[in-house]
Length: 135
Image (tube, rainbow, N blue to C red; front, side):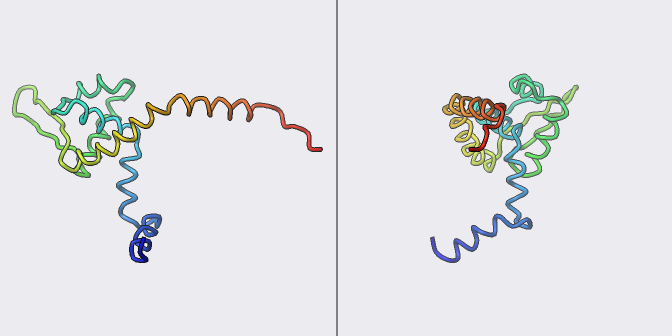
């Protein structure tokens, strides 16, 4: 890695780096799930359809997540002039690209979930045990 690339890379850890705001959105679990659902279904989806797919998400959280993704240009929102209005959400080109990253995270999570749960169990058992005397 050359010196310029290393200096640019180090800037990502600064609090004023614009990439931090992007990471804040992408690190949100519901943003990952929304991007994943839109990517896996590979078609526009309506709000209630997303809500049914994303078990456990509240209406408020789905609204906030979709707005954040739309604001960042990852999701587009189309309103059709019907009664009642029909609204559909789909990934933009940028969202498709981000969806590839989030899919990799999801795939890794599924592949390693049991290992993580086992490690958590060992940690929790060790943490709950009384401290051993120092000799």
